[in-house]
Image (cartoon, rainbow over all chains, first blue to last red):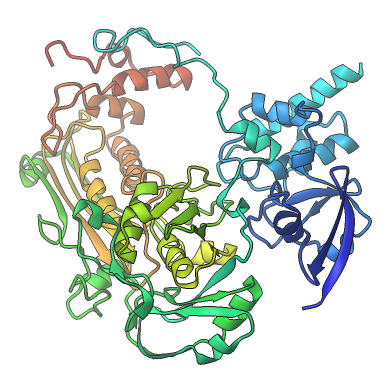
Amino acid sequence: MAKVPVQFTLNGSEKAEFIESGTTLLHALRDKIGDTSPKGGCHQGTCGACSVIIDGELRLSCLMLAETCSGADIQTAAGLAEGGMLHPLQRAFLDAFATQCGFCTPGMIIAAKVLLDHTPNPSREDVVEALSGNICRCTGYEPIIQAVLAAARANSQNAA
Amino acid sequence: MELRKDYFADVRKDGLNEIGQPRPRLDSPGHVTGKTAYFADRNFPGMLHLKMVRSPHHHARIRSIDTSEAEKHPGVVRVLTARDVPHNVYTILILIQIGPEDETVLADGKVRWKGEAVVAVLAETERAALEAAAKVRVDYEVLPAVFDMEEALKPGAPVVNEYHGQNYYLYDSGECRKVRFGDVEAGFAQADHILEQTYQSSPIEHAPTETTGCVVAPEGNDRFTCYTNTQAMFFTLDNASIILQMPGSKLHFVGGTVGGGFGGKVDVIVEPIAILAAKLTGRPVSFIYSREEEMQISSPRAAEKVVIKDGVMKDGRIVARKVIGYTDAGAYSRHSPYGAQKGAAHYPGPYTIPNVWIDTYCVYTNRTPSSAMRGFGVTIGDFALEVQMDKLARLIGMDPFEFRFINAYRDGDMKAHRQPTEGAALIECMQETSRAANWPVAEKYMAMSSYRKGA
């Protein structure tokens, strides 16, 4: 099988790999680069566990071909904490008891980050809409919604 | 949160310093940073991928299996059939002496449900394993199948599982689990009203976000490390030891992190075959269910049918209850005989009924084997019982909540399986519920107590 080169920025670091043509970004990140924070739940774009941010937009890495990501700026949940300090969303998920088994959590946090980046003061409906592509099977949606709203409030207080 | 410390003050210590206190979960820092290691987050150089060839038929005899084309497929390392499994017929509960062994790791001579594992293919890549699996040729002679529990119990129905010899699990109490208490017919004769209702449920899939699977790495010392998302670590270790005919000291299981399970990961399905594959190839092996397999192959909650006949007095007392419960085990036992047995213990409900007669059957059909899921054996029963309670209350024109106070078991009451009730607290729970839900009940019920002096 022919290998193709891909080069992108992952959480601020340059990455370069030769991958089999047709490899998904999810597989490239997890199996080649070793960032296992995006999770493979359905591999068909319905569960959201593999969500990543590509050039500022929310993307499902199980449906992205890695070879189309050359030159992209990719962010995952593993890169959100900076200098040993949790991102406000991570802190809010901890405080709001918004994780149960944790498998959906990185995808949830990524989806929430894209929302807050675009809409710093979201309504509850905005949060529900933004998380609607992410499935939590431990039925923990309400604490997750509360965590995102709390992170947004903390952000706006910091800004003020 | 306010703790009601007056309940059971005499039987418990008051030095509690954890209950009622918020504590951060130990695993959540890993969850929010994406650092929690699930089994599939382990990646080993040279890892092989295992894919199953599965039965397309509900019930069929296997005339022949031809794996020659699959073995020639580029990337294929090994193909496994029933002959490769040291102890191919097993059952999970054999560990607690519940037999007979009735399920094959890889089908041998026969398949009993659509999706049953027949041949395991090991290849360098997932894609090669899938392509090679499609090249395995299995010649089936399709047999008549049975899907309905009552059909399966009729004389002359196709026998689903020869290891049982009949389509029900044979308990030591006979063809079903039985509870007999008082004289149920005398109870019905005395009752002012009799209500018989039938409740049915469908199988329910747990659908965990993380699919079932494991990753096995051979260690240099003839030991195998199995990273798994099982919810039943020692069931899995011990059953793998039996199936592989290997001492448990050769098996090192690493688990504890489960990406959703809800009972769906207590069966011993993926680990033994993956360890065998690692042993026979000397290479790490990954066996992960696709989402489609998770939905179609993993054991669901059993379909159940519950027939409840109650005799009730005008004043609200239930005087007789007769229940026949059917649990659809599918083709193999897994945990279903236990689930059906739990139902037998549970059908009297948290109520004191003087005359009780219960039969629960664990029935084999050519459907996906069912197994544990959150309170299995009692969840559907509770649904049925509580709907029945509402119907009974309506029948005698009584408030359904007050009706439950009248029948609630209290300390010292004898339960139908002859275990005296202790520490019931049901009355107190319902009193709190009455306040919290703003559903007032008559003062005499608020004055009741589960606790009886001397009980």
